[in-house]
Image (cartoon, rainbow, N blue to C red; front, side, top):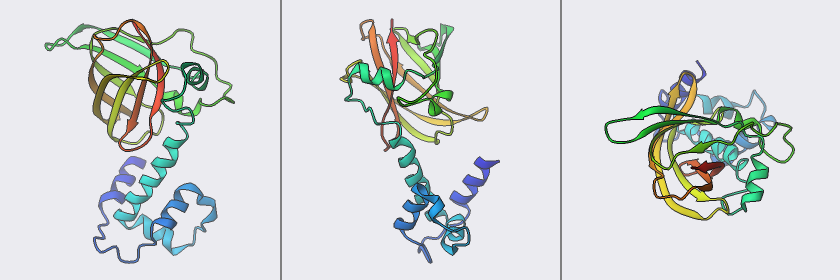
Length: 214
C-alpha cells in the first residue's frame, strides 16, 4: 500500500512549471531533519501534491540513507570493512544446474543488513561465511530493508578495496514485498580469495559486503 501511495505521489501530480514549489533547501531539510518542520506547514502539503517536489525529496532522502552505509567506503582496508559488517547476516543459496546460456543461478539475502551496521551493533557474526563460485552467475540479491527501486551497479573488489574490473548492472524491483536486484556477472576470471561486492543505486554511494569466491 505504501509503495502504491509513493508511486501515486511520484506520477499523479505533474507540475511542469513548478508553481508554488518550496525549493531544494526545504526539501533537503525535510529529508534530513523532519522534526524541524511543523505538520501544519503548507509547504509540506505541497510536496505531497507535487510530483516533481516529491521526486526531488526522495532523491535527498535516498542520499542520506546511503551515506550511512559508507563510513567505511571501498578504499577502506579489508580489516576495517570486516569490522563494519561483522553483524551482517548474509544468506547464500546456489540453485542446481545452469540456464541455456551457461549462467548458474545464485541468491544473496541482505534483507536484515540495514539495521545491523556500525561498530556499536550488537548483532552476532554469521555462523558461516557467504561464498560464490567462480562461474558465470545469474545473481539475485535481496537488498537491505527499505532499499529504493531503480537502476543499480555492482562491482567486485579485493579485500583491500582495490577493483578487480568485474562489474555488472541491473534493475531492482519488488518481489514478495522485498527489493530484489537481478543481474548477470562473470566471476570465472577471479582466483579463489576473499573479496568485497560493492553495490549502489545510481548515482548514490557504494555499500560493500564481504564475500568469498571459491
